[in-house]
Image (cartoon, rainbow, N blue to C red; front, side, top):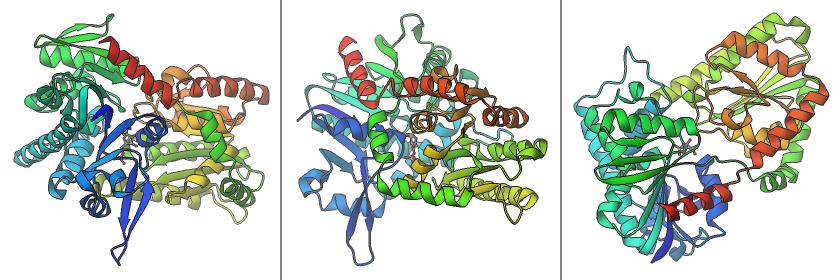
Length: 476
Ligand code: F6P
């Protein structure tokens, strides 16, 4: 039985199955996983996650009770849930990623979507089953008086379900995404909106990355549940239970990041990139190819900048790293193609024999990304909307003289806004001007802003983020 449990869709490891049936284990990716992995390895925590692939399922089926650590893997205490693939796909792709993610990032093309018909109702039932599987596993694993830390939009129903099974334990939920304002959240069918909000309110403590997302959540609870909201006191009372609302920013563990960025593979990528771009200034972006990251408008802004500033031709290169993401969804495949088309147009319009204005890379390469951060003169982070955005925090840690062009809609803007050049992510012209201002920023100003950005980025490392929530849970 365990005292502290963590639950998230993606776990700290994933497995690939080779043709001969062999299994290879890799570390899991994404902001949530890298933040939590650093924390759980130093603490006595059981992590519950879903099997995401055939490789994961093969590994789980050989592990007693789904415990990969009991099957000899060096994972820390980890239980992986073998949820039936069709249930998992409906819950993960159709509901979590195509509905809840779209609502909270304001991504719908509303004249055409969403359409919540019969198919959606079936998908919703899968989402309920998927959440129930997590709630049951947590109820089985939790010791008396345990604390369960449930993560993100995939698991919005699990807190209330777990409370039904185990009223004796303390439950926290944390949203790593933004939260939509009520007028947008109410796109969801009413009964679904109510279930999501009441699901999270099953927790004793509901955490958000910024005050803005916490306020939006409280606004939704008031508008859609008629809950009693105490904004200054940060509580929501619904059906005679009170949930405390917390704001816990998440930053970067600067020492660990630097140690990795000094390794030889990163140094050799730096040398190769420098050779490729010569002494040009570098505008860098690093993202998953994710609709909310606004990569196409970022490229269009670079194009406007080049059109307005011919004096920079031959003197600047844009390194745009856009790694594959969620390719099961057609919108994401189309978006990747749109990014590639736009990049090609820029290369055709401005490229010369001696100068490539843009290098787009769509393959995942972590050491190469770290090398790009270290070389960056300007970092462009322009999401439509983002829970926090850790790229905006990793850049200043690894490049002390880098100017940051940052969307005002990223959670990170609340902490870094004073020293970043803030942009409206829809304003391509404004973003182009900010790129110019960032390139011509005097050296002393870069260093002064860079120092403050670095301090703010490392002020809330994952360990503090996690222990703060455990402490807040004690106080509920
Ligand atoms: O932004 C919240 C988050 O959980 C990130 O940590 C993560 O990168 C993403 O959403 C989920 O991505 P995936 O579907 O690839 O697990």
